[in-house]
Length: 306
Image (cartoon, rainbow, N blue to C red):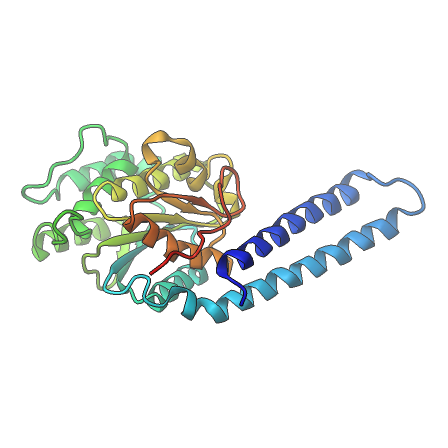
């Protein structure tokens, strides 16, 4: 029987080969690395190879989609997870992560959408004012959490995530409702029914506009703020989010965010499986950087004994 570890290694090889093929193919067409009469033939060969590798990646996705039930079953049994989505997160990725969490036995207690205003540094003063005005009784904000991402994660972590030491919700339903409604009224959040959870996943996009108004840094620090008040947080996005000012790149670069697990291929089945396993790893005291992007240390997590 093929183990999850062995299959993950094979997928890693496919991704690497695909990346090399795409790069070579692009450079060949754009810069003429192969001048002469054979140019077109070599370009076509590269295209055919890329197509073949793309099919292998699709086959790997199909394998993992079919095996997810066995790979994840019970890994998050009796656990609750809150899902946050950034403005650029693909709705299909968010749905797929929620489905994977459910497959693992977790209860998804709600989805919270972060709006463009939430991730916009030009709205920082307005967001900070709204946050400070809804601090629950007994909650203490960190004195160094002054930027809007850290402050928002600090507050919402205390309002929406269970205390990992006691397993109990912090504050009252009234305090939670006031915070959520105030932020929704200010145009910072969207949500339906939301209940407290033990764990959280922040789903982001491909980092295409991460440099605009500090969006990537705000998202990364928001995930870090949540992590400081929870049993585990995974920041999951697409490959581009691991580059430059992308949220995953920031999380992997700033020392204060080292406790946040990152996954940079959530648009693939292996990324969704890894996102779930990343939470189980956090519950066991571990943290990782997974995917195929910059500073990732492994494609995925080896299956853990149960």
